[in-house]
Amino acid sequence: MRCVLAFQVLLCCLSLAQPFCPSQCTCVFHGTRTVLCNDPDTAEIPVNVPLDTVKLRVEKTAVRRVKTEAFYYLTELRYLWLTYNSISSVDPASFYNLKVLHELRLDGNQISTFPWEALREMPNLRTLDLHNNRLTSVPAEAAAYLVNITYLDISSNKLNTLPSDLLDIWSPFSGMISTRGSSQKIILGLQDNMWYCDCRISKLIEMSKMAEGPVVLMDPLVTCSGPENLAGVLFKRAELDQCVKPTVMTSATKITSSLGSNVLLRCDAAGYPTPTLLWSREDGSALSNPVVQESPGEGVRWSILSLQGIVLKDTGVYRCKAKNVAGSAEAAITLSLAGMDLTTPSPPFNRTSPAVTEAVISFSTNITTTTSTSKPSLTTLQSIASKLNLGPGGGIQRSPPEGNTSKMEQSKNGTKDKARKKGSWYIRDVEVVEETGDSAVVLWMSEGFPSELPLSVVYFPYDAEEIKETVDTEVGNGKLLLENLFPNQMYTVCLVPKSGKEQCVNFSTLDTIMDVGQLRWLLIFSGIACVLALPLIVLLLYKISLLYCKRSSSRNTEMDDDLSKETYVKFETLAMQQRTLNGQASDLWTRRLTQESERMLLCSRSSIDSQITYKSDNSRSEYLC
Image (tube, rainbow, N blue to C red):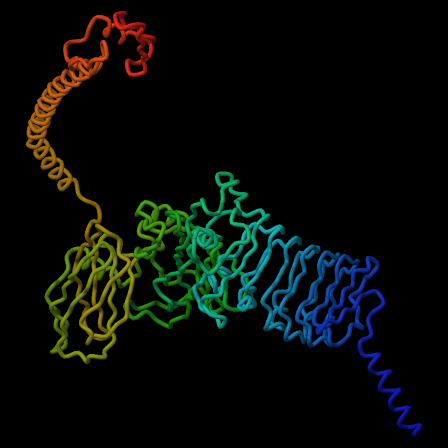
């Protein structure tokens, strides 16, 4: 009996110990447990909070930090309010094990950096309140953790922009449908920040102008603080250009060059705002080579990396990275060494007189951007070439190698359209078709050559063979596209098989600008058209003016007739229609107005408002005006 009684007493003690409440807090139980801790002397978040707490409020205390796993045992916690404290540091693992938390409020603190990755520990979180803190930025990576958030308040902070990447990948702005359904609205608080309105937040501003959209602003009167021309302008009235992420383009991804040669690596980028370009090695080693950059127009930039006298350590992967406020992009160029050049025999290499060849990554003339389609002119290229000690066409100035002079002279003095035979193996019918301002197509026929035999196609400006470029193909292809050519330029193209004689032909690219003759004829035809059309226009204007005057005259005549009729009627109706004398009705008084009636019209009041009285039957009328 005593054992049973002791066991019951122990159970009562355990039941009383379970809902134990911290001394500096107040615990309330109404179906669910709520704990309020608002003692101003509290410096740490209480650790002995009842395990069945559903709502925990720590308000107006001296708490400065939220430590790791501060709420680990509160597995049933759904509402966590840490408002108006002195919190300045939140550990990324502070909210570990809060799987059912629905609402997190940290407003009124001193948080300058929020651990957005901590939201992964709260998969059911829907409300996040960070207003009235000291946040200066929201990283683009935060979008991955905001997928399920339906209420986000970042107002009254120190924000001036949002990354364009954040708006690109966050579902409300990217148009992606999340698991919560497309009909769910996102409540977003942005007010009371120093917003700098540029293209980075153009999507946000466009979203604020929509009457029906997935995002609803708490305060629709959000204004810009900068730049100066938009200061004080509402988001709904601001007009901004959209940012465009950079795109990087190179004309080749692999370059093979001889030992000791000079190589120019060229990289082109487009985007808005105009991106910056940076070169780097794959292994992260520093680059001390000279780099030239230029922007021929807004939204376009190109860069040249110069490698002089390359050696084995210069081979590898070179990366060109373009970056602007909208994002970044990069492209890679692989540089390798070759033992010999297929087109020209190379003498033995020595340090005093090296056999110099060059590999030039030419500027791509096909850059197309949303903001600019300009490309550098020949004058611009010559100015850049002078900085790198280049020739007029962009190549490295040098004298042609011995043994190759006869070939160049043959190309200058005239190309041979007929094939040269070597036994029964020869290339014939070489021709260039489909010339444009920056490309051309080379066609040829082969007799006796194996279809897979290597073929080198060498092309260069007619008067600048030292800047030749080589494209490797096979004899059996019979067709090759030459790109990145200069407009209005004479070119020579030579087909050099591995065994056999080369075949060369001249061609010219089309001029992209209208020549003087065409402009002169256009002016002549325009002048003739003006001379023929001017008399007709004058005659037509004269006819229109006559009709207008005639119509105005007839209209004035009709108005005068109507006015006279209307005046007559008015004067006739001013007289009294019936006058009573000696109790008998007189005839209608339709005669002309008397002098007395005319005097009535001179009174300040109208004849309708005038009053008439009769003193006697024989007395004259009195008009009171």
